[in-house]
Image (cartoon, rainbow, N blue to C red; front, side, top):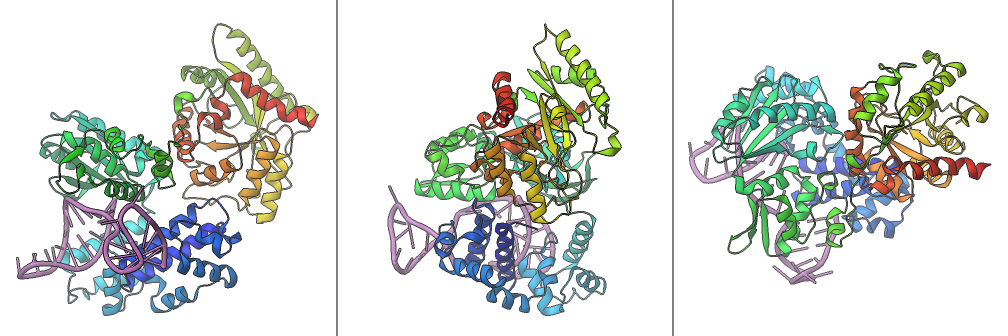
Length: 579
DNA sequence: GCCGTTTTCGGCCCGACTGTTTTCAGTCG
């Protein structure tokens, strides 16, 4: 189940959507949307706030605070119920169809009594759209197409897929004569966990050759829109790519604008207005004279607004503008800050590469230490035994000793399984032989919230458990993750000196950014781990780093960015307190 | 409905593209 903040945010968003469909005041609609976002991202549990506390949330005023109180008290909001009674849920679902927004969804509902995606498809096939003003043959075609796409997928792809596609296309575009600069923007540059479409930017005097090449790429399955500054295509895998070509002088402003997020940009524009400036994708201008002020680089644009350059993963309107104005923006952890990887596998369990191969690959990444953490025996299909684990330790120690000339030190660890009661695989005497232990939930994913919370807290209290691996167990787009009171878990981590993992595998990214932000407020430290089962998967660490950045973590918050001596002190401290 | 270094009233980001329009509304990002 979602935490109360998400649940309330969803209700507010639904109300906003329903209001938009009924043609309510657009500013009021936006007010509810903004409030929904603010509630979702608010670090405190909204269900524990009173009216005064609620009104301290940005964008929440008297009216919305009243509605939240009403929801918390009764589980429902009368105004939302009224709106629901007027607009069937299916009509709201219609707006998920690309090219169909609230206005046209409402028309379809009013005039054709369409109230679901399926009914819309029927209506189109029966030709009932034809006598509806504003809906021509092209609209009918686009809607059918959109419905098909909607049914095919959620539309969003994982970060690695998006990154790879973007890099391939950019490699093509960068080869075209006249390409001054190119890069990707949008949610991909902000490194959101999933990407709905990819925004590509090119700086060039003449856009034509780029638009031409873009529509002719092998990736391109269909051209959605084509113009002088923007062209959109859909790839063979159904992903939408948008290409914008900008004058080279506008590169910085364009990159800034198209990187977003939308909410971040609204904040910047508002700030610009206070400075008597106007910000668009073409640059920063004097509001009155229209005289250009800055546009060539992002740094320049931010500087003229009185801000330091804000790293894209932070541009989510989570307070980064205010922090920047006050000189309180964190220096986010970078991939080059990582000195090691603390959760990896070999072919002793379910990894695909041998110990020596994984170690060699890690050494090539320039790490100064590296932990091997194969699965423990309670994950029965891995057939782990004490003997196998001890034999691996001997091999690893030999490898570590043999590498005296090399810099990278090896740590022997394991990935323990947290059982339903919070216990782990081995007794403490055996655990004491490891340099570090990761402990993860692999089974019993449907226990109650109270049970999941208790088991994680109990695992934290084990003096040999150093890191909680992929804390929620979610698989993006496939599995929601366990239902636990994460704030209680975070508090337990902070209290016991247990780190939380940011698992870098693109289908996990667990913890996720918003939970990291909350955990950080509890004083938790983190480990950004690849959880690699293959040599190639070691490189996924970049997505973990991005997720850590989105959670505002500095290198001081991340234990595998620490020198080995400090890391060892952290690992041993927990055992020492216990002893 | 929210908000306040121009404001307690009157604003609220803004430009591009599409499709259906003969001048613009809707959608999107």
